[in-house]
Image 1 (cartoon, one colour):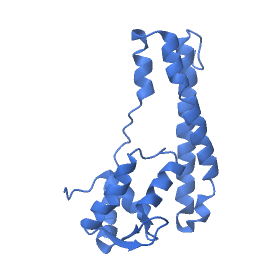
Image 2 (tube, helix red, strand yellow):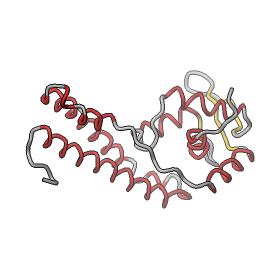
Image 3 (cartoon, one colour):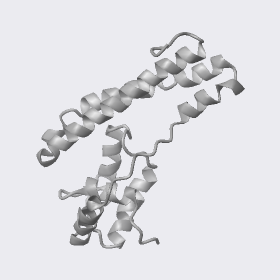
Length: 183
């Protein structure tokens, strides 16, 4: 097992926070937020807290669950220390992997209508994610100590979705040889 902490490790530590959380809570948080900020397989959201507990950054405590025992994690002093050190480091610029951008770039190799249909499939997830953000607008009430930063992140997520929607409009216009918003 690697002892190295990754940006995902720190995301888990922050989400566990002082109140603690189970892996199922982390998965729920990400699903409710529609993975706007962090895309990871569900299995990683279960494996990483366990690994962090084995490394001493989280304390794991078994408790009753609906169908089987659930593990509830809380930050340890080592976890708080690791977060303090990491938070003091310079932030990295966000790297984006955007499959639709590659599809648009490669449109010359396929039928334009097929690429348009491919890109059209983005509309439903954009609408679902937008609706999820609308439902989460009041989450700061549940975490008053984080209310202000949650609001900042919520507005950022909204701008990300708006940028995706605007890009989609422009990409479709380009594929149809129509003037887009930028001409």
